[in-house]
Length: 436
Image 1 (tube, helix red, strand yellow):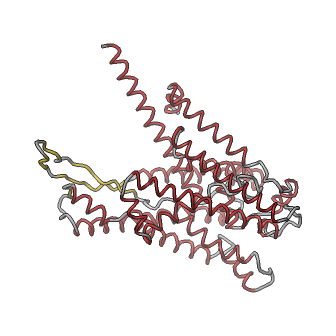
Image 2 (cartoon, rainbow, N blue to C red):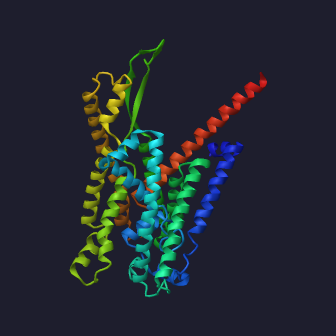
Image 3 (cartoon, rainbow, N blue to C red):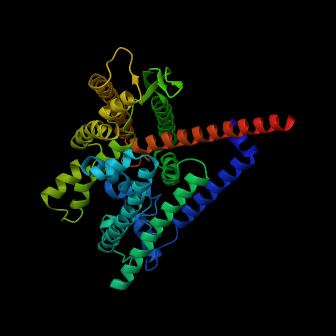
């Protein structure tokens, strides 16, 4: 709160905050503007009858509820998230991408451009899929007989695809504007707003429908988990690094000590997102089958139910796997070891080169083990709470939701505090110069 008050007292930061809030308002208004060709009354009638499957519910969560409303921002940030993850994973497969990553700022700008192109391509594909599932009724779990798209002509569907794709492009542009001229990382801020827009009303519904006692328990557990997540996300394993003194020209460089900061949860929110997305695919496929078929019944009972033994076991295994897998892609011990050796750095007590790489691998594996246990705890607590309180599927938060809310909120506050200190320091220097 003190940081926020100090930020509003500084003109530059106040303008950044107001600019960010203005774009957030535009983003939320766009979530309620229906795509041309959609029967808005029929859509709301269908939303009231559907519960939303795992896959549909995940996308609807990241779109701030605009997916089921078939608005111009129906796709939300999911195409950009998917494109960013795909580009990151392609670094392992395509040498060109890895070379661009090593080029620094110029290479990262090129990768960002590829991500934008891929985002538009995925938006076209996803918008067409959403319209097809909406017309067939699969988007609303076949619980609604209303025709939400009265005009099924090819031209009308093409216009709707273009509008939804344009909405995704606009969201991507607004996110970059927030990053450049506002507060926080733009895409993360929009994800945070999307989740909170559906999270808070559903949390309040628990008190009205299931009783205020259960509401209090859920609120207490939620607050405890968020505090725990913030504590873990700020924890670091600092590996000391010593640089030798080197003579370059007539000047002596080096001789300094620093450290490599390694987070306990280096993979972030990616493992639970990947795990829930993969487990939701069979449920989505089952929606196209007949409800009386044995395989459809098995999938709905075991993979469509987040409290089933099959779902919990597969979910846990996938979280552990993706924790190690994604960390191995984003952090390369051999690359870090080579960079340290090139600049004359070494870990005290460890030889430079291969032994340093092996040591870093050993530390990363231990951190990933603790990080996977931490993710399992955070992601499975909501399931345990559902079973203990008998809330059914009404619990508004999961592990992914908690990690994003705590992580993005903490990162945004950290950036705001850093900018407050920067402007205070700049103002102090200007006053000192004026005094002289």
